[in-house]
Structures are given as C-alpha cells and as structure tokens.
Image (cartoon, rainbow, N blue to C red; front, side, top):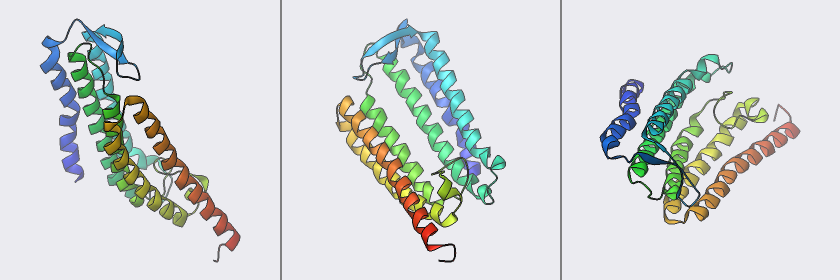
Length: 222
C-alpha cells in the first residue's frame, strides 16, 4: 500500500500545476486572492501571485507528507514505528485535500469576481476529519499524532480507549459536517464547524482525564 501511495503522490502534487496551466490563458489580469466570510472577493492580485500561492501550497503538501511519513524516527515511544503506514495514509489524505483546495481556488479565480463557496470547503474539511477518525483507533502511543495528553501518553490502555472513542466521534462528526455544511449559508456552516470541532476535542479529553482519575484511585493493581 505504501508503494502505491508513493507512486500516486507526485501526480496528486502536480495536479494543481496542471490545472493552473489549463486555465492560465483564460485567467484575467487580476484574480481574486482573498474572500470574506460570505465568499465575496475582497482582495485581488496578479496571475503571478496566484502562481506563487500554488507553488507554496504544493510545497506545504510535500512537507506535510514527508513529515508524517518520517516522524516516527524521532519519536521515543516504543511502538511509534508501528504508526508509519497509518501516518503515511493520513499524510496522503491531507495532501489530496490541499491539492483539491488549490484546484478549487484556481477555478474560483478563473471565474473572476464570482463567490468563493466557504460552505463547500468546510464540508471537505469534514471529510478529511472522517478519514483521520478512521485511523485514530489504530494509532499507537506517540508524541506527534492523536490525543497527546499526559494521561494518555503514560497509560497505553487510556490511549487505546480514548482513541477508540475519538475515532468514532471524528468519523461521525466529519460525515455530519460533510453532509450539512454544503447546504448551509457560510456563517451558519462556520458556526456549526467550530461547534463540532470543539466537541471532537473536548469529549475525548474529558473521557481520558476521567479514566485517568478512576485508574489513579483504583491503584496500579486494579
């Protein structure tokens, strides 16, 4: 599987550049570079500025993928190396998301003053959350990915149970965002997005702390 991802990665990274080349001649001299919360362009720039942005985001995609692929090498946790393939898949999902985002930005820019659909972007982020949630239950304790709390890092069973819960929440929350955000106005979609993100972070944190307190009261032999 890792060989397949490594072969697909260059294509995923090159797609935004190919997409930009396809639209280059049809782009106006000034393209929208920033949008307000309602999706209306509020800053314009040159086509060269758009090119720089595409190159920068493609570079970020590469760096994120390489970081997640190799981060286990510097992780002191005993079983961190077992996360290599899982983190590689998460890194690939992030790379696909960033490439799709860049293509969407290019497409929006090619339409001149057209609105930028923030609700669609938030829905896509929801799909990314769902993908990450699918891998959370299988993550081994490490210092770089997952619910890296003092009480999860010191107790493998706390880590396992916390991530089993977090995985279900992230998957369900991501699907919820993917389905609902695209049908909501931008402001409502953003409010829903941040509420769901808070839930995805707070509930596993509280659960893991409660588990820690109960384990501490029962003693190491319980």
